[in-house]
Image 1 (cartoon, helix red, strand yellow):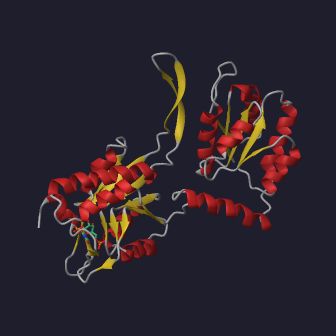
Image 2 (spheres, protein in one colour; image 1 turned 30 degrees about the horizontal axis):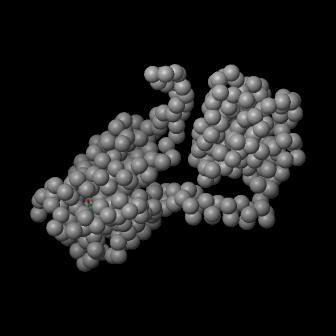
Length: 364
Ligand code: PRP
Ligand code: URA
């Protein structure tokens, strides 16, 4: 079991005791700060960080300690997918697991009895969720969270449509037949940047020390998750810089495919991927998901090289393409700016925007 733990200054002493206790139980424990009982810090900074790690399933459980445990629990419970229970005795700890499926335990640090706190932690870690009628109740909480945040609770293999007004406005401009090649190209980059901001929302963070002109402080940095973007040539190239502007350390692979105009089936002509592609979270880029043939072929090619966590980022998709991708690869998320009506007899998306490659590069 992987446990993440954090405290503010008031919980620091108890946290140190609990870390040794958890390590003696041979649990994988990561400490998310703070690093001193003498320097005042803000509990939300720690709570939100720990809560995000647990909510994204990168850790199984979290433990948070502040003076009373109240601030930590309030802050952690703002993160969808984090269910934090403030427990003052073993009874609370047991019920928070059996009935509420709490994945984060908040404890009071001020005046805490260390042995009593260890007992609370011990009961909380070993008690299972009872399920049964409690599932219905926890599901209601999850459904509410889902209604607040589109990306919350998303299973692999779903489609996320970006309805942000800026994205929608720019999509209307790229649909417009009068939009020039230069403007089209700029807009595709801009939409891609806006989309990547959202699709990277759950990237893990880590605490680092930063020296400001005034003092040394704790701050956050991306935890070095390995990313790769893989544009499908040609049109996917139009999205690449917009994405790399925001994630400049991502590696880049290329897949060359074109659609045979008669059969509409993809024809492969190039593939160059990072050597460690199997270790990376991969975003395949292609503005158009029409029949889905190209996307399925690209995903096949990448999976053959061992990659597993793959998302498809496109601008306009057709229901036919979404269905084909999910039939072939039910684990792949599709992120798009618009889901259009249908394909015409030539396999073009209606209303769509025409041929994305031609409009990006001025060919016909
Ligand atoms: C377009 C688009 C996709 C593909 C989508 O590329 O960029 O790759 O069509 O169609 P599908 O879902 O039916 O496979 P195209 O084949 O026109 O090549 P290009 O990017 O070189 O213009
Ligand atoms: N490829 C495009 O560029 N546009 C479509 O509408 C379909 C495939």
